Image (cartoon, rainbow, N blue to C red):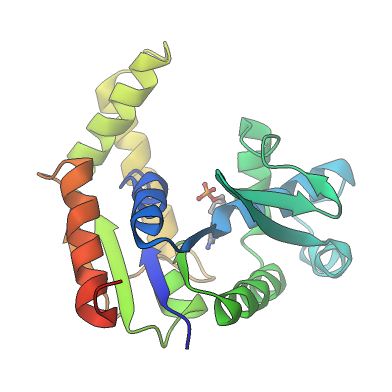
Length: 224
Ligand code: DC
């Protein structure tokens, strides 16, 4: 049985960079599931599809070919034969990914792909449904969080470094709204799996979080 680690948590908890670092320390692959929804969002945009039309999305997902492959510097996300890794980080694609990920048929399709990948290799899967839906039987589930204020503070620091001067209070308000939406949406709302281990990074550095998660994984799977 491959080593399968599930990692979820709310927006701004530092999930993807922590997941990358943990996977690297353990020499296993990191599957960024959000990138797969983004690739399908890009496809829907290119096809000029109506993302509010569920029936249209159900048909479109059967035509799209989203896959991932791995290079030395990590995951590459593919749409048919095209490497779209660098094209899926725009605001337009974020909005499309958020729209298409609402639909059950799209989610089931993606989850099937993700589960098939996890069966073939040791992998850390990050995504808001990793512990609850993709890997419900994983013996190692991490729910990474931090206080809303701390997550907003980190996001605000990142923003200001990029020249985005949105005030902290607004960043916090938007983050609270996004949390609310994520926890209350109809399909696969963000929630902690009952057997997940809560890691609260509010008062921890990135290195401390990575060390802590690696030791939790080793507690389950033994030292690698
Ligand atoms: O994590 P991200 O921002 O790259 O995710 C892109 C979108 O896909 C975002 O709206 C959340 C959604 N998503 C999801 O519904 N389920 C996942 N497992 C991963 C992402």
